[in-house]
Length: 146
Image (cartoon, rainbow, N blue to C red; front, side):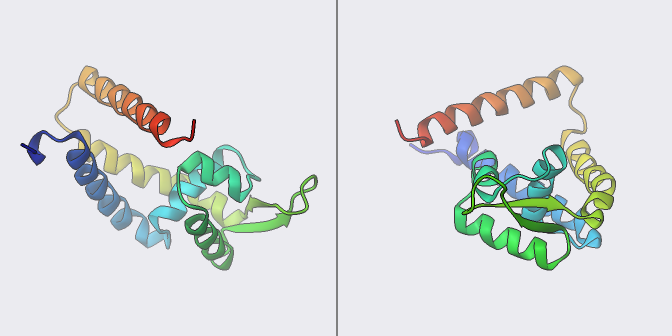
């Protein structure tokens, strides 16, 4: 019998929703949405990524990423420029506004993480993160075509 209280999928989904709500509340004053934040995380690490590269890194649908990038360009967070080697692709470059949001946005995310992990020992925190990474890797393997 299915018991949601012992379902990794159910609990992970519930936890993800609560993280998203907490993040959304903390980054709203920065005029950022969670989808924009996760995209910015990738661009802060590696500026100039294409839409296809972002789709692969973030495990989202092409249409979802296209809409997110369109909003980000509209909001002055990125500039889209033709890829120098692939005429079909565009690179997404951070604007100064996006760069200025890195510190306050990542501090907001850190605060959500800290609140979520309050009361856990360092060993428990490390173990939880490692288990989550392993679970994500397992799911990514099953999602990719053979």
